Image (cartoon, rainbow, N blue to C red; front, top):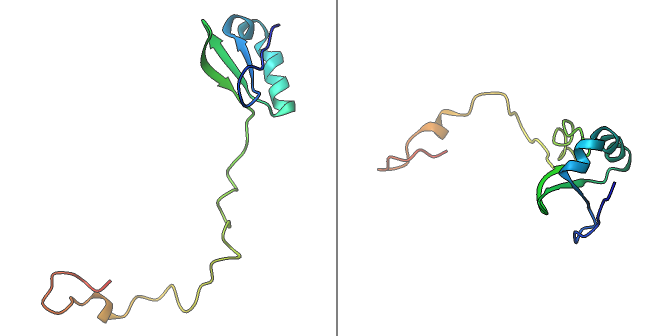
Length: 93
């Protein structure tokens, strides 16, 4: 298997024919090392094999130490918030 590291970021490249012959082994390598492999056809990159990363929990609770709730956020807004501004078609909210 001939893998090259000619990319600026150091990622491995491999020909599609070589990938086809060794894909299961390469999948294991990527899972263990975390390093991506760029797959080429006729010398041009066509695909990347990257490790799977579970991102489901990254956003929930991300700003819990930054955002503070002040006051009641559940009760309806006061009626004056929904009244039109003076001589305008715009609402105040």
